[in-house]
Image (cartoon, rainbow, N blue to C red; front, top):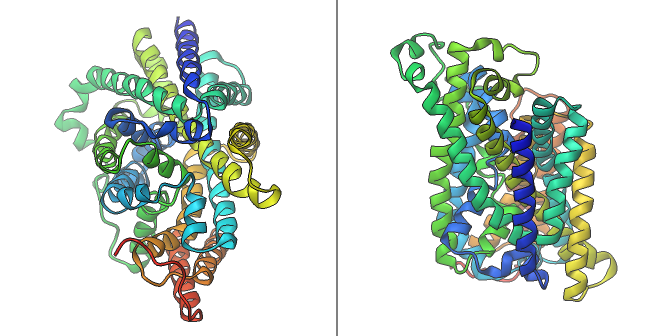
Length: 463
């Protein structure tokens, strides 16, 4: 019954996604949904930016194992990112009226900076997408018993099909549908476990430091704690996926308010799988002690919940992951088509740009699929992707919007130094927090580049 229900749900998803593709006639329709998203669709799209495999599968297992300190990166960091987006960045970015985030670096700096930033943007999304499609593979494996790799290929194919044809219109339309399924599925499970979960016995059986929010008093712990906040909280701000969702809104006020609302929803809805994880830790710990704790929630629901609840949950999980994956695939595809392709082959016309964007969707999906064969840890893949954009692009973005002097040399040094320090610390397995010191290096590179450049670049508009 569950398999039949999931198949029907996937067919409905494909039908809705392909139906939305009828609104796509040019590159603006495909990449920015014609800039016609109202408050509801805009909020749904922003909420779905990261609410996928890492929140439901990854963060829940981290919560069960480490407590509050394990979920700083997500969902708390993601909620912080959306709040900062609405407070400081949504309106200024919307006023630029650009097609991609790569265009921002061309406008504020120069074409060389655009190329380097676009490469960093594209690189940063591959692990993120891989994390989502790993999640789909896990689900299809648990439901049908097929090999996880086969499930990953199947899930990737479905997402690519409707994203290829419908672009941002399909992404936004399905986000609204899928978010409804997510909320319903998680709430139903919570109702079933509430009688046991909301007892004093639950607190008594948790480790004494389970709800510890701040790190230990030593400097190293604080550095790692701040670095964890930075990964998604700051690292995802200079992202093409969040930029596309902002630019797809009808106006700048909707862009700002939908970011704030999405932040609030992320905290509320993001807490649901975490509460389920607490219940499993206390009352069903055998699911946590399995070889792969990422499958904890799925195995628990399959084993302990009625069939109709299992169907709802699987629909919710698939919805969350597909929403996040499709938007993430759109992001680097837009950068490849709008920023990298013209650098190599010249500026395409609008219909050529639409065709190149669609081909890029397939390319990004296939490359991300191959990455899953190298690493199948959802939380690790997602965290690394957000960190890459954070240590390279956040500082140049802030300087481009809010500082009078922002030079191309500063931006290039900022991007390169941030990435060099981050990858050195990560690959050498250094005890120092890689995201924190990568961000410091990026900021230092901007200062040095600006200092050695006498003439400033184009003046910013945020005075």
